[in-house]
Image 1 (tube, rainbow, N blue to C red):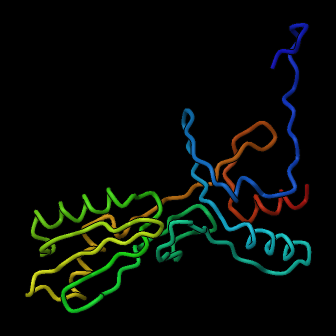
Image 2: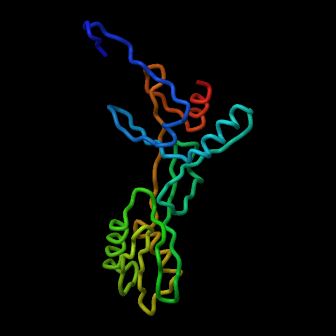
Length: 192
């Protein structure tokens, strides 16, 4: 970075007391590498920092404001993937209601994927209505012969009611890109 008299100057890094990178998440690409850091809950990050200071074990998993159900069995401390499912409930024998949608989707994209699955005969529905206001509420009316449990499994298999989100933690450390994991990033932030 050139300064006012034209000489090059080293970039200035300002330390942060909060682990913002992990709290907000980040995504980017460059020549030959990419990064996708999922966002984490601030309270859980602070509790993990306390555990680091006390030399106690801890685990961190991403947190999504949109809600949904998350499977972290392949998360690999930030360098793997998570599966996020919509929260679907059977209101009665012929009606399903989606209350939460996966991260990275919208009610519109979820509904479009359901319509596509219905056209391909992967799920049998009569109608679908979006009553979303402050909270997500997509109502799906099933055909009489469609079993609600099988319909829910079909929604997870053939629509955006279930998505996989890959995560790869690549950060700049000592002016070089380095692949780290979520725990080592938090430990480095805590040490600073």
